[in-house]
Image (tube, rainbow, N blue to C red; front, side):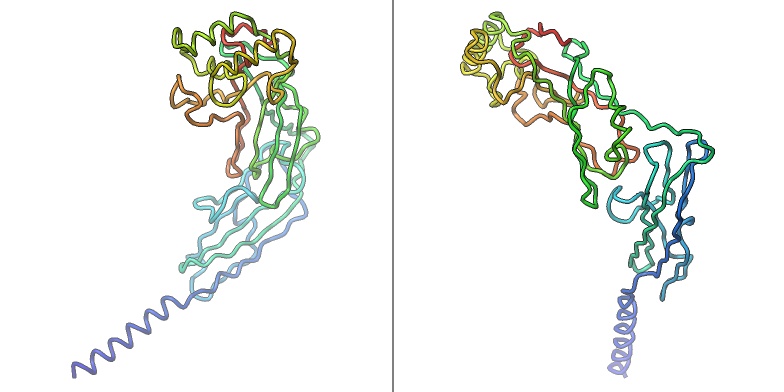
Length: 317
């Protein structure tokens, strides 16, 4: 009797587990396709339900299927707790693609895509937003003629490579007239500033004296930016080699610093692990933006350090 009971129980338990594990079929998701969708008052919010044409599943009631939506290339994995996408300005004109996700109770996932042209009702001219790039000295003076290079790639391997937009006008606004890259979410991209003119700017015998006193331990630098400025060789340390390079620059024996650099830039919000050992860990010289950021950052601020100028006497203009 006991053996028969155990056998029946075991078969039932086995069958129940087989049934519980048997659902490997994802939901059947069909997305609506639009030719165009229009802005109104420069503000548009689209629901996941706007894009679901039909939805079914063999083992889950439709009401138990979880839906999610995102702009294509913005983030990875199921878009948890996201049932809407938002478009706000002229950066979003043109072709757009949204991802619609469906997940049944067993965790099976289907992904559908809907592409459309985003247009503007009433011709109200939803202007694109600005990206602002600013570089200041340690003394909080604005540095002129900084070039901001922008490089990016999205999940479809579309790339952008925009070089040389200047900070003279304090914004990247001209980019938006012709560029549909990182102005939209969905791109991993970097913003890298550079300014490589006038390597002698701010470099004097006084700087060489201060660097020498730092090396000898007589008067060590108390700022990470002074130490970065003293590293003329850009090898991550301050030695007599840096004095030799700067002296050759002052004497006219060389006309540029190593790597052709005159300035180095650090994101303004970077925190050095040690203010007296800024090279103990590599410090960033660009700002990196993830494809999951939506909306994307609009401000990119840097602190500029003139190489060789440890007393911060360089003219940023």
